[in-house]
Image (cartoon, rainbow, N blue to C red; front, side, top):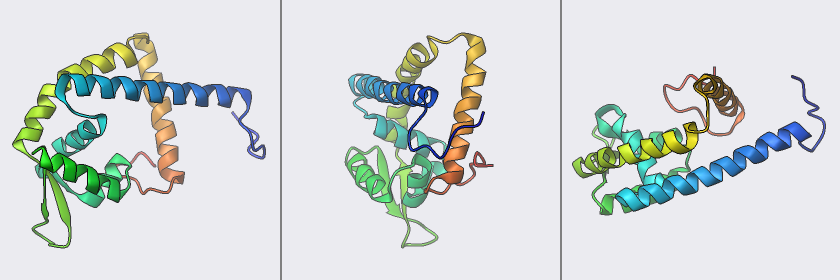
Amino acid sequence: MTRDDASPWLDGEQQRAWLAWIRLQMRLSYEINRQLQADSGLSMADYDVLTALSVAPGGRHPITVLANGLGWERSRVSHHVKRMAKRDLVRMQAAAHDARVTEVGLTDTGRRVLEEAAPGHVALVKRLFFGGLQGSQVLPLAELLETVYGHVLRHGTLPPPPGDDSAG
């Protein structure tokens, strides 16, 4: 499908899709934040950090790698993980290989809190995000979202996360 890229405006279909995405993203973020706060005292940002660290080698990442993987500014990650460290969810320390590099690591408390929060989070995602879809719609939706994500990685300003070959 070819679009008129010379126009400064979205066409009708593009506007419909973009507004649908914005409404979905904002409402889903609200619902996820609300559920995580109520069930586990975590924000969605806390959950994202804990999840990223839980799958990282050794349960830790340098701040710059964590920021890149989350799609956040380094300063935002630094401020956020400092607050999380005060709650014993993560620890910050100099990397063994280079004392100039600050690593963020998942604590036992952080892993326990994440494991306790995950079932409620997954149940909400299944109910709200997937609940209105037919089974046959999930794979095409995943493929479309992966296509958009790959395009953003190729043409955006933030480098792709290490090991993410979505930019193709």
